Image (tube, rainbow, N blue to C red):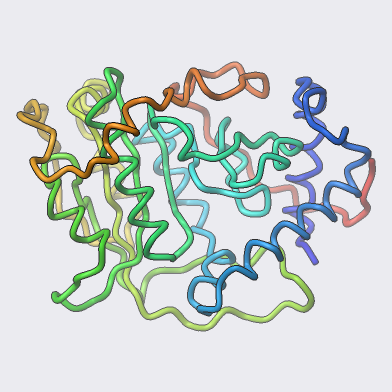
Length: 310
């Protein structure tokens, strides 16, 4: 099942991708919107079946509220969404990345981890520790190597207690010059939106117990560009996400000295050979550059229909 709003988003995305010629290179050739919608749900079930942990399974249904995305677009110049899905991506972003190549029928780029990050992105990954650690490391290495403004705003769950020893928090502590925890949304104020799709019947998600960290993984060029664009951007971001406790009122332009950590893993050499996502991704859906500021999305249509048209 699917909500009328998400159905409308998918229908529009399907026909935009088709008009842009993205369907021409997909094999087998897409037959219809209805057929591809069924395939999308089949891939969703396949992906969720890989996990036994309920927290991880449920995280596929936990979508951030729209005002967070709007704030990041307006004040942090975000124009890309990493590790998303056609079933939960924010349609206001001109670019998003999904795990399945077939999701290109809905305008998705394939596999965010296949290229270096560049530009300004948001990433709210599935709550699997290995995946969260992997994408955080990928964002860190991208910020270190990029010659362009590169900032990844990551939304990661965190325990309330001070004794946190998981892998991704160790990375945060190892790279404090690149990873800034800008703020934290307490569990009592963290409100996910209702699931937009479900497999059989709609079942409310269990109450979460974690806080949510808002983390900027960036290089000096990204910080300078944000400050030059609007010197008060971090204050405005805080005003627009008032449920968070913010730790910064200004961001320094000071350059990063010796960005490479002495304990960087040997995988860094392999990472260096990856293309940047600007060169790797196929353009066509939108004429905006990946780091270009985009307008805010309009209000959702209140008269959506469940009728599926090809």
